[in-house]
Length: 126
Image (cartoon, rainbow, N blue to C red; front, side, top):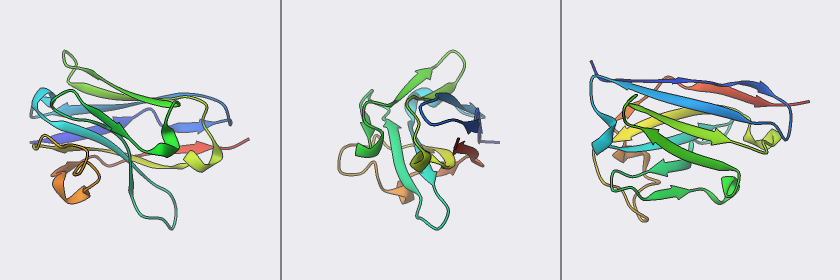
């Protein structure tokens, strides 16, 4: 069974850090594009950071300089390191996998991601 499981969410104060994990089972992440998306209450799910299968990365302007994505192929896990967190980063964070090698013009298309995790809540509040 193909599955993605997120972990690492929680409550953090503004300016703090969290590291989210996305562990895959049933398939190897190496050949997939992996994306982190987030959805705040009342808003659409939006892309946060993407690691394409060709090694390219893409990110939203809102997380530039604060978030980074990394892969540990040995653990079949992708991480999202989030620093300098702001209240507006509060959302449910989802990881997603795409069998396609997504690029600049396609990485935002949620329909191209065929497997999604259940999400992990991140709350940034004092």
